[in-house]
Amino acid sequence: MTATATLLTADAPASAPAGRRFDWGQPFVYLVALVIAAVAVGPVLYVFIGGFRTTADLNANPAGMPDPWTFQNWELVLTAPRFWGNVMASLILATATTAGVVIAGIMAAFVLARYEFRGRGGLYTLFAAGLMFPLTVAALPLTLLLRTLGLHGTYLGVIIPGIAFALPTTIIILVPFLRAIPDELEEAARIDGATRMQFFWRIMLPLSKPGLVTVGILAFVASWNGYLLPLLVISTGTLPQELWPLPLGVTQFSTQYSQDTGAVLAYTSLAMIPALVFFLAMQKQIVGGLTGAVKG
Image 1 (tube, rainbow, N blue to C red):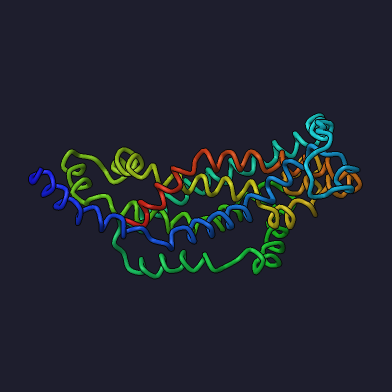
Image 2 (tube, rainbow, N blue to C red; image 1 turned 45 degrees about the horizontal axis):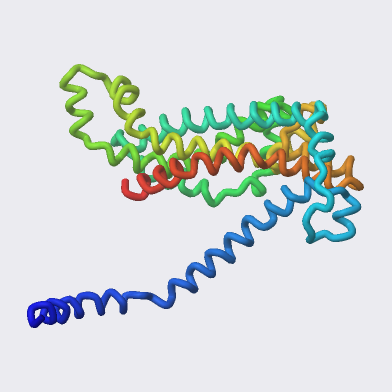
């Protein structure tokens, strides 16, 4: 009995501090996180659920649940040829922009990270300063430039500026990745007879895959959801509305079906679902890529 009591007494101080570790601030943190999540997710759920409601139901009870549930709005959108034309246009723009961002970004980041030359720091700073240069500031000169080059009203007029505006973020993320790769790997590759380009293709690219996936996802989602640039370049051109990207298609559809609120909500839901699903499916790669960039 005495030995047992001694053991219990000895274990008591160890368990007491564990009980005092509870932080009463944690419930407040979780509450704030839930509120922020509700504010972010609430509008998305409202738009998605609203697509299953009739316009009369929405007018009678805007904040209620569908009564009855209807799929006519979704059928109206999915059977419209213009919707699939808008999807194809967004897919072309997002894919081409992503490819250009990844290719140009990794080449520029490789030079900035692995080459020593005069003005390297200033060039990196110039790319960093591009983060503070919004598209709205360049709207007028960009439109005039595209008209001069004959790119206004074309997909290239959206793709090329989209790549340019995404490069600062891409380089800021990729340069730390490439700098973190040990110089000993490059020296060993040179001893084995590899050139700089062979080292780039066979070693640098595989090791920087998390960063490439991250910038690719960010570029794809930004291009898919981009509205201002297509508005400036495509909506004032000669392309038919069937070849406009989805953000412009949503605007045009909501104008044409302004009295059919349920159909507009269904179109909006279908327009944002691909980018939302793609982003959620790749969120681990994004977090891993950004973490690696910070560590680098």
